[in-house]
Length: 363
Image (cartoon, rainbow, N blue to C red; front, side, top):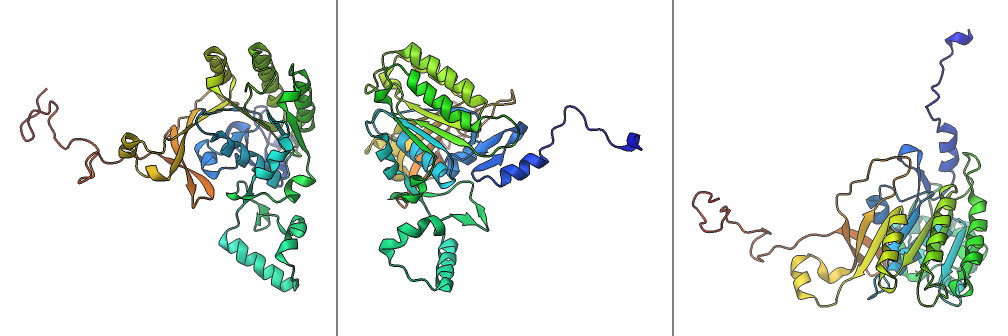
């Protein structure tokens, strides 16, 4: 009978069909409350944020005037998208933004993957000179594990990304010097996001937008803060209804404090980077592993989509290190012991006033 058939609630969501589709799309995975994550290109940052950048969110990165550490985040974010063959829009104050693609890092192979690739090549019986292997990389370099593409790769910052990753893909590079009033730039962003719009639940691809140094003096619109705010509001509303993530870096030291605060308020995910002085003896005494640090990364805000519950992180400031001078890793800050002879970070005295070491507590 029809009455014996169980009736599904109108408030329930069925993700069975969508999960099968998303599992086939590299670089995407399910998150809580019906959200989906897009990898940032840094495995440690994905873990800190709970899975990565939320699809349909706006990520703002506050630059440091002392060092271009924000470029590490931009490079990994863009390289991860190209490895997953995702559409990319990159905007920069440089005259030739396409030349920046040649500085993107290359994914690293693990030892097991390297040995597996050697066995496959030996079975094929092909011997190709190493000078010509790059021309066959499109067929041999898929960076897959057990037949599935990795969600997030480790990237070698010393090795540039192979040309075939960005030669035949959908990449739109824009120079911010050519956008005097931001109208043309906004139209190109809208046209790019229209290709990844959420018309239905089926997701065919996910796009990435990377905008470097918005509001820099090289831009003709650097003094038009109202126009830039209108552009970001429009971009945020458009990207919310699309399957894409936008990462924007801006220099807080080169814009007004009020404008910087508004940008931080508009961000779904807010991150800042800061350089570490080469020889800061006071800081070296406080932090362990100070010699290996290249900078600090602080997470000020995590995206909250489809929920009102804030994300509480175990830590908000992390050290940026280059593991073997190749890959970028993030670690929690560890306070060094105050006294080198003991492992205690605080005074060993049990006295609250510090007047007596063995006597009773003195309040």
